Length: 524
Figure 1 (cartoon, rainbow, N blue to C red):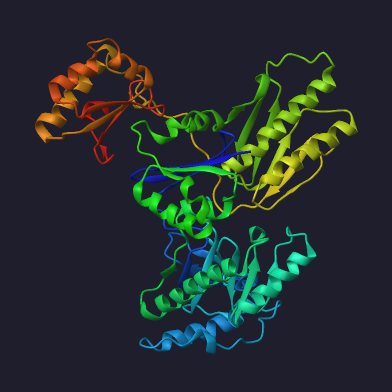
Figure 2: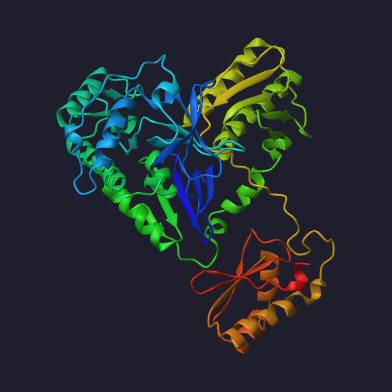
């Protein structure tokens, strides 16, 4: 299996697609202005105690206060609290972390009101992004994740991923980390560290320690509360950090800054693979070029089709996600109804495992498969689902089919489910049901090109239109495109874009920045 990553950076958002054998399996899309991300660390103030929940609400600058439970404070909260006061007591000289004292663990049966008080400053990390009406979820036990290691301040243990099975390798890694780590820090050794040399692990440990020191410096020097003191690496780098493997063939990026960022990170973790990071400079949108746009449009929405006419119905609610399996207009198997049901269900299990990763669906998922009478067929389906989910990085649990034919799945949820709405308000009539005559559409485009070139002085512009419209503009020896170029200069470029509706268009300048050319009459 080969993997490719395609990163589309736009003015207002960044989208990342992971392809396995050219099939879209993971998709992330977020605004470039988004400031809340799992892993960010804040020095914040306790807003309100909730003794009944044994928890508190903390102001981290979000419109809804973040939630912090007593058990999420961590066993070393007292050590953090004391050291935080020591750091803030002297604004000129940082109190050395090596001299910090580890206090006894906080009791597991303690209460929030005896540990915290309103207005108290705490150092917290986001573990779950805001979802629906809920604010972020916090922890007081900080961690810094790298490619091979996870650093945990105020701990002293070294633990090795349970996925490393070799007892000899586990012992080697544990002994190696104990020999290089300073006191007052704990380390978790990740699965990908298996077989790595001491120098590689030592280099990463130093990088993680530097991040922790930078947090302390920022806490010491800033007065504003709440204050972001550590920002998780960009979404592009974070995804590559967690997913990177030797089977990656290419990482394509269409933005030079993100390209340099990703290339720098890959050069640190795998210097021999740095050549796979490539800067995409084509005029065709990067997602169109790699067939991502088409897969996004066909893979999201309420109905998802898969092989031989069968399809899934996926509904999202506040409490859970519900999936219904339908055979559709599929022809019956010659082997009988039972074999047909098994075949449809196995195909649904393959597509569902992909959909869970693609949409990042978390919480409780209930799947209504087609009824099967034979116990061995139900077992085959359960095993197929478990095998498919082995590729999923999120923690999950799968139960065998109930007597009603339902399968229950729980999957770790750290951010809202990705739900791309593929049914949009018509961009040409804006929901009014009336549009200008399509015959006049090219005249409308020419007027706007004339305005941009003659009135504003734009020398180079890119007009994105539906592929059918682009084909019409480009057709013939004396095409409309050639006429426009002869009239307005050869800086006029026509780009077919699959994300455009039939009579939708967008203008971009030579820096690929969007130019808003909507007329008032169009938006009425």
